[in-house]
Amino acid sequence: ADYDSTHISYLSDLNGVRNRYIARFDEVIAYIDTAAHYRTVVTSVPITNYSRNILEQDVNIKAGKFSEAEDAYRKALKLDPLKAIQHFNLGQALVYLENYGDAIKSLHKASTMEPKKALYHYTLGDACRLKGLTTDAILAYRKAHDLEPTNTKFLNAFGEACTHQSIY
Image: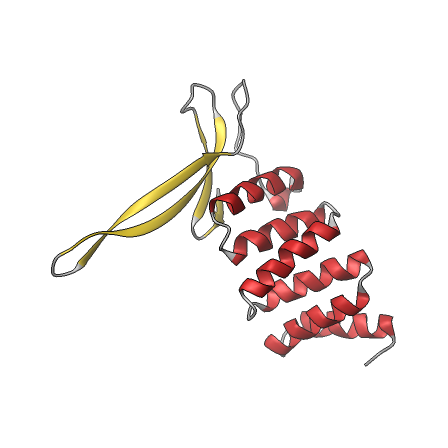
């Protein structure tokens, strides 16, 4: 199953028991002659270490398995802490788990690492609103709207937060 463009999760029985793993793909230069030749490097870490086989690959945030998604995203973050998408994915899972404080930290990190990603700011705004931090939510929604002024979802969220705060 894909996590993002550079990670996959999979089942393997490398140690004799089928467990879940996450792998990151990187390309490195193997050698240069008249052209650069690349090879793919795979870094893999176990997500689970059960004593019995896993029957299926079932980490799926869309299916509502947020705790497993949180664990998988935390492990992906350990593999690649410099990618904003890792912080964003973890933040989304934490919002669904109603852990708004940690979600805000992850989403703030993602939006700081990639400040031009409107969706990161919008999702940060949602986490702030759900935690009751209306002023912070307004600032995040405003940033998302400034980055994508034609996105009505961002505009509506900004407007609703301002109305709730009674400011314009």
